Length: 85
Image (cartoon, rainbow, N blue to C red; front, side):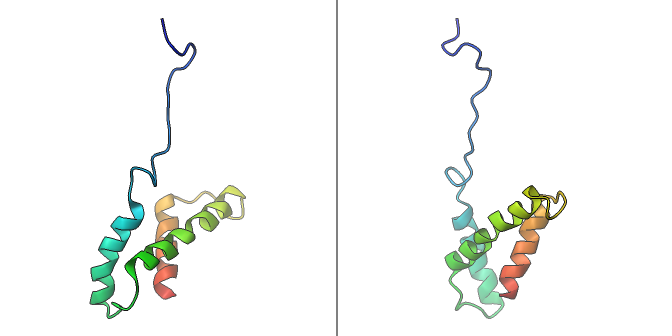
């Protein structure tokens, strides 16, 4: 007998809880920024700036303002924007 009748799966989103996206980006951004003469940029601030673009990019797709776009494409566009800034 099941303790949770009718339940077939329990799922949850671990992104940001188990995955340290910010730390990984900052770790890899630090030598990249230094190589490009921008060691003055805080790598964690860089990661935060990139992440701030995520929800607006997703909202453009969710609202239909832009057609379905792969997340990899959105991430790259956001990265290009942060690098330009």
